[in-house]
Length: 290
Image (tube, rainbow, N blue to C red; front, side, top):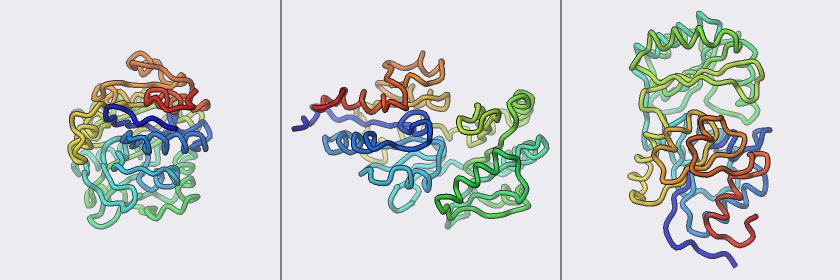
């Protein structure tokens, strides 16, 4: 028999590199473990750089009751209905500038936006290998947001842009990062990191200055009436550090970035060993956790 925990917990978990294994799948053990936590009274949700549509596919079978944090904190949304409870969109001027800079560096920009009624992902026809992979992954699960749009700067000036993504070879990343920081200073947050699925490419993500998991967590607690709960944050990469700062406890898998491991209050086994799930089951004092 599972024990119900004594105090309410809110567990906010990253997906890639944390809950997902290195092949970008959620194991059966992880899925069952998340449901055990939820059934025991733990309030579980995810905070990811991924879209609502991707999370819905990856978390199929997980009985989440809370809204999810998507696109690094740009959106807080209901997973089942797709309704957005919070939207952090870039101003049009920095959005257009970011698209122009990425295009000039051959980064094949991709725009994730809200057009007032629907979520969109705009891309051009000819892309570099990494951007082509990014779009192809979404085609595989039938993402309805994809739109071929040759005038990306025009899109950036017309729709609510919540994420601009681009990819360059690792050796070109530093120069691009320097220009983005110089021209978008204060107007956007810029994430840059080696892509975990496309070796040799650096992924850039450009968003509203407060499109951050650390800003999103307090909003999530307020929206759900859970303010004052004990918050456990689980993550592996630099975009999880803000979430760690907003949490009472922070857990990093062994495969996490060195800075994330240093900031965590606890370390679990790697994502390929479902380490975070094992740690959470122990933390919730559920029988059978190993």
